[in-house]
Length: 320
Ligand SMILES: [Zn+2]
Image 1: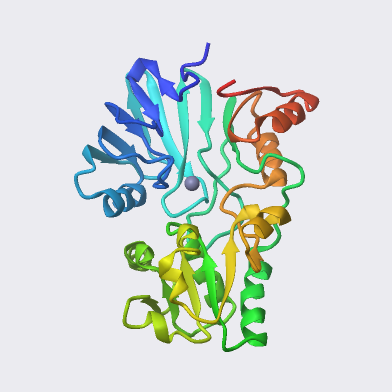
Image 2: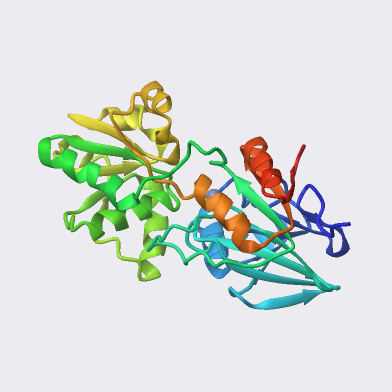
């Protein structure tokens, strides 16, 4: 009998992991909107996650916050809770729950690929693994992020007068793209959509090298020429982006692996960069954690379940 149920609820301490609605006690894996909701009474998370939640939802977005450091083991009514880096975005964490000698690890969103804008993923051994499966199909094999980022630089070289408007989520992906561009030696200012400014400033305060970035505003939007501009995917086709002249539209996402998706969304420059584990990372992590039971959530459950069973590991979808 597990002490964590299928809603990621821990009955004995009345706490949820990443609850979708306001609750009394929430353990939050990271600050993306589908995991971190506002208005909980008590939030337990890493310092970065709490700070980013406050930036996005306001200082009082929960009644009480408790910061827990990576690796710090806290005890609540018979359960030990420890957070470990998930490598997904800044502050992201896996949650390890221990009761007596039994361990349950909830990965949250994670990736094992190196990312200079996030703490490095840490492997944790466990009895039961609750894994995400966003890219849980063998067709998903993410290429090297640095090679994908070169596509932007190369396109800019061949069309130096075109603006390169790249869709990227405001939290995590945008900062990672900027960091990768800097790694490739691109030292010019990078223009960003207004929704990214506060998050960028926070990453900068954590000594993450983003170089010079400028917010796009009504004074500069009409005069941009040959620039790299980052905007959330939702802004690519709206009135805001129509004001940017002579542009090539790109998108940085793991889903750009699916050519049909890029085509549907009229993306001329698909950049395959994901903050989620691909098939190889998912299956390797399952083996490396030595889990005897795997619960699969957030994505493509069936294929991963089949793979686990073929490898002698008990597996089921978390929300069948
Ligand atoms: Zn996420």
